[in-house]
Image (cartoon, rainbow, N blue to C red; front, side):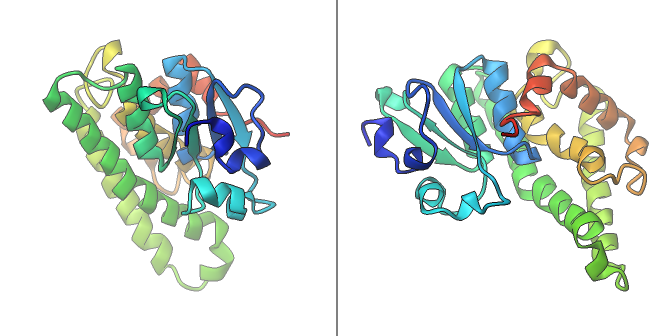
Length: 238
């Protein structure tokens, strides 16, 4: 596709400025990864709210960009060789934005792959397991009221994963290092999910998140960044 208007999704969410990145999202842990990254990178973008309440994610227009009907997704009108590119999967989008700008990821090959490793840790472990815990603990609690197995299973796994993060962060401020410049897409991929245990699932006490002191300090450090504060509420409610 050579123009933004060639993407069918733009028929449902017409861009106000077709020259900037178009973000299709909601302020969920996966969604805010991208708004936070865009804010950190100071890339101009336009956010479109994909309402689950009206099944926007199942519309033909949205499915034309993401056949997996999940947020977030983006279109960059200035992709490689200045050709528009559409992307879904938050981990892939984070990697794309980092490589597009040369920021939020180390330049050396070893550091780059180590960062990608932690992004994959979030995509394959933290996201799915935290999400399953939240589903059974909060959103489907009535369905498992007489069966503690699902909550206990995922509670145990969430605490195991928090322990992995605690080990990584015990002697560093960010996933990839100690100083301010070490902040990376690995942090952006991970910390919204840990934050969501309390902010989204109200499960901070039952999970005893305070046991993981390095993790809780890191989440606070990441959450206080101006880009995070702004990104948490993107897209805004309409």
